[in-house]
Image 1 (cartoon, rainbow, N blue to C red):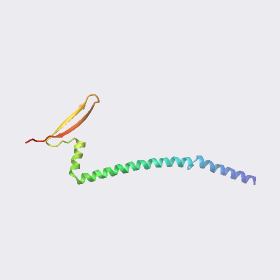
Image 2 (image 1 turned 90 degrees about the vertical axis):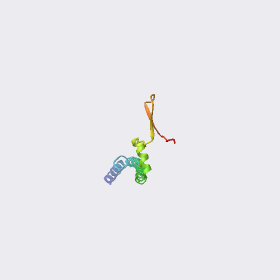
Image 3 (image 1 turned 90 degrees about the horizontal axis):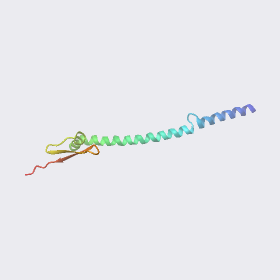
Image 4 (image 1 turned 135 degrees about the vertical axis):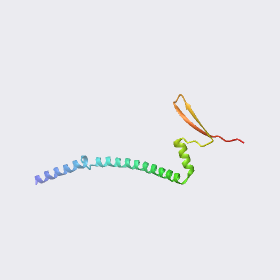
Length: 106
């Protein structure tokens, strides 16, 4: 009878050790929950980015004005009859691009 009690105590101690410190322990589960929450936040940000890109692609497919605006912004394209001025700031080492429309006067 005494041996059975010792065996049961050793078994209980082994199970408790695994519960608190081993693979699948409560600490391990808490760490996995933190990783899951972090990954869900990243996934939400990526979903929002994908929705924005999908809207932009839809706009580019449907509207010529959005194609023009994208080309002007990304490629620095200028319309005929416009003047392009590049203003530089020598102190900061940066530049600002300004495009203005020239209007033909009668």
